[in-house]
Image (cartoon, rainbow, N blue to C red; front, side, top):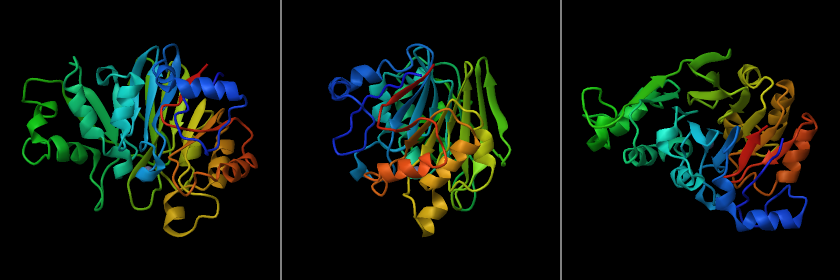
Length: 318
Ligand SMILES: [Zn+2]
């Protein structure tokens, strides 16, 4: 497997570049590198490698899955990701499907910006949108979409033609609430693309982890989760690439730990699931700068390749 990174982050953060020359080349041409992501075969691109904090100078959580120059799946749309989407060279009209892990701001805030952009493109086929069901604290996926685009009460009701079946003028979003348990369920299947999900524990927030199977390659997105339960290990079984969220350092306690996986848990899940490659994303101020400690905790349990993600990094699956 040939791993490429676009390396657009400032210095002082942990890197895996063995040669200074390679770093220099990458640092000089991040956009050029990014826009070639997925030109041939299947690749995952990190649009947002950060968490909710703007001080991390990263877009919040968002990922693209590419195949042969087409951006086919978008997973989450945190703040800043719409700009990264444009920088990646992707088009909204290319997407087969949009997935949400959950509806915290850092996973969903740029959703209306992406949809508004799509209005200017030549898209006619529907856009399926899948995400978790709701509870007393969080909207269901169908509610979340209607909260923006619903004809009567939506904040952006002026764009309701994107949602209302009886309004003419544009393609339609098709939101769905995915009720999953700890056994992976098949959510979507079209041609060489299949999507599976499990419910994961993220405090009281309904949350999903996603498995994208595309043209014989498997990419699994943990989303935000404490790592409790067997669902994520099952979902990630034998994945070519597992993108896990590095939101807390080893030793985290309290609410941070109840919401997120420390490195030891990420390493154990990666090992138990026999994933072939591990990428850490959703990097936050509390984990940035602790990469060596994080890597060593993971390496005690998981012996495969490990990379830390930066915005627009591209991971081809060969
Ligand atoms: Zn998050």
